[in-house]
Length: 164
Length: 140
Image (cartoon, rainbow over all chains, first blue to last red; front, side, top):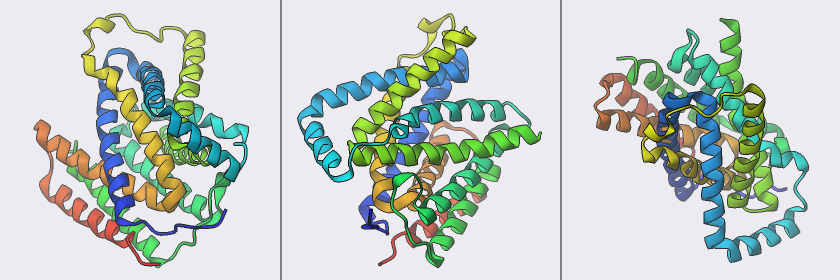
């Protein structure tokens, strides 16, 4: 798998930034479900209603999705079995964070440490091309982006929101 | 105290792990199909776990606001977008840009809801984030 696209274009930036906004709203909504039935119920509900939502999207887009999937399979081959296990990892993530949020770390500490984990594994994943995705050469500008965005996020998490 | 620290850090690792794994599935299918599998497999796993542990579904479900049922569908959009992104701009770029969007929208959302926000830290944080985002837009 060649590293065909190594830098983010403006459209990618907007799409990723917007999906971060979608995540903010989703986390807020799922936290509301968690107030009624706890973190595991909230995650179960989100996965269940999400499955229904995905089926509705697929039903509407089925022709094109099937065509694209056939093309993708011809290009990249049959997916390895482990590629179907992302949902289990996601479900386990919820249990880990709900435990640590209820510890002295609270929400801010959980977010800050989670951010560290995300950045470190992303760097390793690009550097070695982990889990069947392309390798990406990292340079000083990547390092600069990591430092600036991590510093800005930590400022917001630790001193900006929720701390007041 | 060491255990919660390990848990919180591992959760961050898992966020990226699942994104890579879903991204790999999307390479052989589509981002939307990958998101579907992510959700149905997670749902089956949590249902089984709930059946073993018990007490998964709380009483008083009818008191929940109707919009709590929309979070899952937003999650589908997010997971599909993540797979689409990670296979195009790599893990570091997608992680940084998604976190950026999460942080900035989190501040705006809290301001709109009237939650107290420390302005200097939030504004400085957003400025640093925007500077970092500009750095991801390099020419090859």
